[in-house]
Image (tube, rainbow, N blue to C red; front, side, top):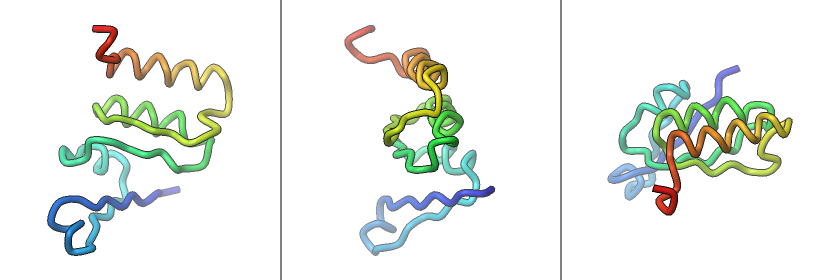
Amino acid sequence: MRRRAVVRRGRRAALGRAAVYNDIDEFLADPDIDAVEVLTPTHLHHAHVLAALEAGKHVSVQKPVANTIEEAIEMGQGRRERRPHPSHQ
């Protein structure tokens, strides 16, 4: 199943236009995107959060965070490995 991501930024946002992505890898490769809000069904959160972290994005994910505690722990570990909190550096 393909998901679409819509991004408003820069001049397009000022004009009320948005960039539309049909591919998560293309979306995450966009250097103009700093942060990702994960609003997909819960069973996709794990993969989408880890992919966004791997792409170096700031990530916010809605509840429930994951389907299992193990997935949630892995997502938290991925955050610490890829984007350590400034107070931990």
